[in-house]
Amino acid sequence: MKVGDWVTLSVLPPWVNQLPEESQSVFRFCVGRTWRVADIDEHGHLILDVSSEVDKRFGGYMNDIRVEPEHVTLAKLE
Image 1 (cartoon, rainbow, N blue to C red):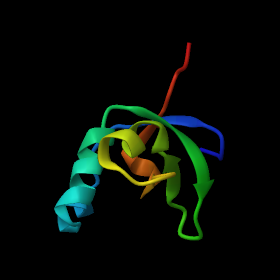
Image 2 (image 1 turned 120 degrees about the vertical axis):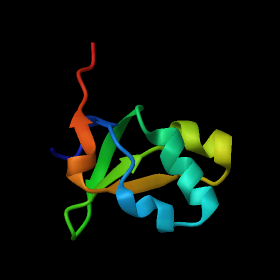
Image 3 (image 1 turned 90 degrees about the horizontal axis):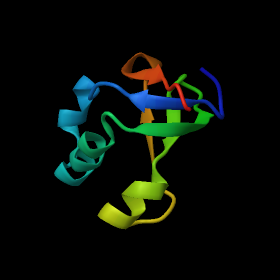
Image 4 (image 1 turned 30 degrees about the vertical axis):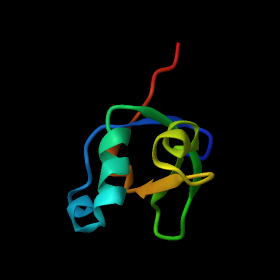
């Protein structure tokens, strides 16, 4: 996967249950939805731009989440 690809967060990463409840809610919301890969960090985690939906529902500005590539699938956009 590369920057600009659209991916679907297919499963909740197992470490999410260690996050604060508000962050867990954001990740649960994102599962099954398709997001653009905005960047890839130095650890190989995909930085997903979730701001289009998460900002309105949970607050904040320009929200993103970081996940390992094994938790996403490449989306087939029509």
